[in-house]
Amino acid sequence: MGLKRDLKLLDVFAISTGAMISSGLFVLPGLAYAISGPDMILVYILTKAELSTAIPKAGTYFYNVSRGVNDREVKPERIRKSFGAERTFDEDIIQYKLLHDNLKFIAEELGRRLEKSGISGKTVTLKIKYHDFDLKIRCASFSLLKINSEEIYTIAKNLLNSTDLPRKPVRLLGISLSKLNNEADIVSNTQLTLEF
Image (cartoon, rainbow, N blue to C red):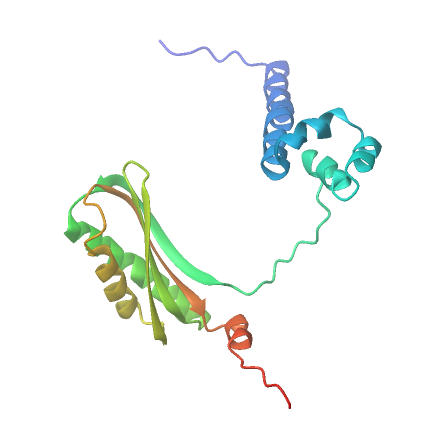
């Protein structure tokens, strides 16, 4: 015996309207609270003019944020700070052979992305999330730029095998490369000269 399909247009309308209204009532205030803190309650009680008078520098900002209004310009073009790849497993993994195999797969994927973009970096970061959602991150930095997936794999494998990491089932593995050789690094590494 299965469930009866009994939803009519009015039922679907009521469900979708309820979902939209509840997101406005619960999600947006939660986001506003995360940004503005406990003062967010005042934002909903006071009008925009009252809030701007009470908090001259930030009143209008809090009022708008609490209602999901943000006029800041979106900047889709930005200098990338890192490249990464990660994999979440269907079942937690405890055997190091399987972890190494998956680490190699992730390093090869990252290597393909780096090769395609022509970017390399100096810091390899290994991200490990365990079955209990405990997160561990280990990094290794080098003076030479790394782009080869084999080098990245070897470094990540050494980080995984480090003795300070707990031996328990792993849910997620990830590798990222940072301190990239993009324009930001070139500008920040330039030594300025002072004329005397």
